[in-house]
Structure formats: C-alpha cells, structure tokens
Image 1 (cartoon, one colour):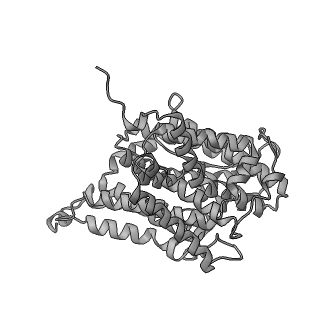
Image 2 (cartoon, rainbow, N blue to C red):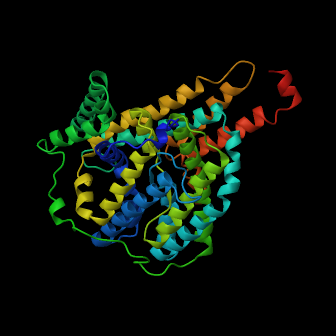
Image 3 (tube, rainbow, N blue to C red):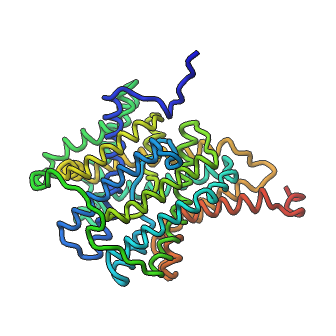
Length: 438
C-alpha cells in the first residue's frame, strides 16, 4: 500500500511551483538586497561594485535556500525555509569594514564564523527539548510583532524615502492589502494560495501610471553576470573582527532556531535535535560560502515564515523553486532589476498580511498553553515586553557597547533568549518555595 506523502514533501505541478516560488521571492527580495546595500553604502562602494554585491547575495541566497530545502547529506533541514543575509550582522560588518580592513576583513570573519556554526550546530541543537508550546508560541509571536514595523515602513514609502509617510503611499498599501483580503474572501483553491503574489502584481501595475515607480533602469541592467571567489581580494583574518562576527552568528542561531520552530509548527513537522542540527549546519556552510563568494552571513528569513502560514502551502519544493529563481536573478541581473522596481508601498500592504499571520500563528500556539497554577503568563508577558523594546524604542540601547547592541537591538534575539531562560528557571529549576506558591 502506498504511504501518504507528508505535505512538506509534496511535489506540486510545475506551473504551481513556479508561481508560488515567485511569490516567496517577492516577499523577501527587499530584505535580501538590503544588507549589501547598507554595507556597500557605508563603505562608499561605487555603483558597479554595489551591484556586484547584490548579484552575489542573490546567487548565494538561492544556493543556501536549495541546500536548506532539498538537503545534502547532513546539511539542510528539509523544510520550506527561505535563506537570506541576516540583519544582525550589519552593524559589526560596517564597523569591521570601516575600521579594520574593508571587505577582505569582513569576508575573513564571515568565513570563520560560518565554520564555527557548522562545528557547534550538533551541540546547540540539543536545546530543542526546551522548546515546549510556551516557548515556541512566544517566539513565533515575537517574530511576527518584530517584523510588522518593517511592513509599516514599506507601506509609508520605505525608510529614507523623500515621500515617506505621504497619504498616497499609505493608500496604495491599504489598497493592496484590501485586494489580498478580497481574494481570500471570494476565491478558493489555487488563487487563494497566490493572493499575495496577485496583490503585488496588481499593485505594481496600478502604481506605474500613478508615478510610484518606473522600469527605466531595467534596460541598463546587465544580461548576464556571475560572482567569482574573492573578487574584492583575498580575505584577511583579524582577531577582533572574527570574535564579533562569531558572537553575531551565535545570536543568529537563536533567531534561526525560532524560525525553524515556527515553520515546523505550521507544517506539522517534528523538529528533532538531529533535524535542527542539519538546518543550523546548512546556515553555517552557506555563511562560509558567502564569505568566499563576496557576500555575507545567512539565516532563515522570517518574512517567508509568514507566507507559509498565510497561504497554507507547506511544500519545501515550492521554496526550493524560489531558491532556483534567486539563483537565476543572481546570474541574470536584468531580472533582478525588474523585481527591484516594485514599489515599497505595494510590498508594505502584502507585508502587513504576512507578518501579522506570523504573530497570529504564535497566539494560536499560546492558546494551547495552560496558565493555571504556574508562572506561564508572566513568562510570556515579560518575554514579549522585553522583545518589544527595540521595536518601539530603537535608540534604547544606544549607550551600550557595540557588541551588546548586536544582541539587544534584535527583539527576536532578546525575546527568544529570555523566554528560553525564564522557562528553564520557572518550569525546570523551580525551588521548593516557588512550587508551594503555585
């Protein structure tokens, strides 16, 4: 008798794979190119080198996604996980690049930190037994709430935009969001699954005649280009740079684990220590590969966690297809230029739906937790409260050392570390007086 295929392993028809995969690419593209743009801008790279960084990033993002979804030996979690450059590394990389030797010093630190993740992944993965619904639900909620301000900035026109906050930007984002909701309400089947893609496509078509964007830069983009190893020179290995990047990667491992937990929960998959280690090991390998091919540390992209929950499409082959599309974008810059022309307000409308879905999924998981006769409510409240600090007050930790800001400026990192610690203290290491008070 033929065994039933788990939805994660289901292979959809080619047309659906392409459409749903493109939807994942559109959901993460703005975030994917942000890190090379920020780092390259801080290092004052000329436009051609900046474009080179972006193409390299897209290429390795695609390869990293394929490794994560398809799996190669003990590398890859084999879940629908999209990979992209981590924002946690931006500040340390800018400091390394501007004070300790430019891009070669950054890439040396990135390579070593990636190899470190590969080495410690099996040990780090053992903490998965300390991730009950109390912890996973809190982390998923924190991820969603931390991402919503990103969607809000997109909806307002994009951070730093001259038209930031103009009513027409917000109106465009609202129209895209309403269009997505209308598709969900009125349609069934495949159209409902591609509601986000349909909303982005419709919003972009409307935005062109209204002057939100144009595609004039597409014609000047190169037809073909490939990133070669060490294009900016052989890497240099500065001790302080390596230490700071290793700290970043340990923080990133916590965030990535939260994303893995969220996707496993949404897809009904078991997240064993071995599977978690395989996923983290793939992160480390992709990061080291990025250092060789002129790009930066890689992690699971929380943006796409929301899309998995919103569409209900659980197949890892859909996200693997998205990885293939990213590889093409990295090799054919003109395709990337087309996607780059999508207006920020359009992405903002879609982002509100996607990131809100992540938070709602976390709340659904937390609804399964018992709050009677224990301290679980306090654990959730304090963890979410602390995680919200850098979201609501971005300058809160500005007076702290840079190495501390690397951790504290990420609400996902602080909230995840705190809920894991509080769960251990209150539910695994409880003292006798605390137990009598329960």
